[in-house]
Length: 115
Length: 111
Image (tube, rainbow over all chains, first blue to last red; front, side, top):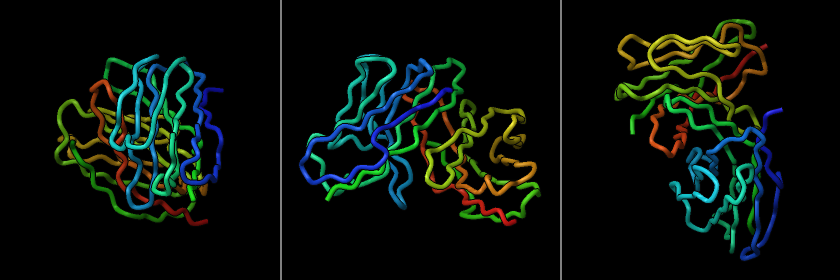
């Protein structure tokens, strides 16, 4: 089954304790990205990756890091989490299609609480 | 970026058709119209997309106005499982392909 998986699904942590949220896709997609969803603000892009070893900032990258060492994986790293990073996080992937149309596949989400 | 306008909420009876409108008066000729939906406690899910012509797939139909300034997502027979927030999004190919999600339309389906 084609899917994007995220782990963990729920996480409660304390300020300053480094954490990683994993994301993996089995569709051989080149493009992957991370979004966060907050009430009243909708979904906002954090980072994206066009391919292996190619990453770039989205709209709200402060406080986050990513890496893309393998095509299928795109982990989100919070080196020193703060309470304002409490949010619902989604990983997404899509293939590059030159006709400008594409579908993004989203993971189930990771609900992070930083106290 | 071209913006979209959708009603905040809509209600439908089960097994009746639902027409979800979207206005995008500043759309450019290279913008695709995408619809995603987000069911409660789930990630967004692709529904349908189109450029100029009407489109049909197993989930829904997309009707695009001739001037492309508006479109309508049509669910032919709403079920309780269709209750979700529906997002109308314009996209263009720029390398980075973020989806800009607005507030969407919250669809309630009544049994």
